[in-house]
Image (tube, rainbow, N blue to C red):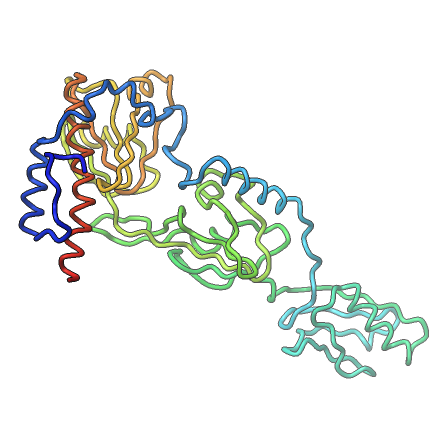
Length: 360
């Protein structure tokens, strides 16, 4: 364990843990992270990217995901099959008395003169026509039958979760994910401390088909209009819009109004800094974004000056990010890093020890 040179027992009382944590914050650790920041390349963020991460996917998993969606895109749509509840019209050429306009019964049948109950459920239009013509052939010479679908009530997909109006929605051969999301009214909205916020968490929403989760990125499909992720919806698809918890973004350091802000996507770095009164004159050219908490933090260095001069794209934040604006000195940055990482390691260790102590 990196620290003040002492090894702690497995069971640490809460009072001792608090004292150790205070020592960590005081910076009693040796200068493990005193190296110049520019050598810590794993902390750098390519500011040309619009987001810091892509939902935790590495290059290989993203490649496989794209390949799957491309194959899905090239699949032929299955032919329509008549289902209970659909309204159809059956016309027999030259025999108007046999024409029928009716809904398919729950057992998949329609009633016709001479034939009684004819089973059409589960059949394509051509198969249903052939079956009727075959039956009528016993009574009419060379019957010619036409079957037309007037209303389809059976082709539906389910939308549930954090949308405005969950429920069953009709789909067609051209209905896509964004269409169904719009039919469901988009994201639900609720008041939080007097502010209207969107409830939907598109990053963790799911599209389930035949019991399997499809690797669809809802943010790309709905917010960015990505055609590959905006997949065609099929009968029986289950769309779950995840609900986000009230999360926040903390802005601290050389900022006019350091604060904890309610997270609302999309939340850009420049816009967030502006809402906090902008950075002080003493700020450094880069901003540090700390992600995944302080137990196992990931740090990213963002070139704010590059964004402002148009050399880099703006960066979008994620829930619970910490935005730290250092002073315009390398010493300030190095002190911050030296204190943060040993503290995070100690918190992780103490959390396990205190948990073990309380369980025993």
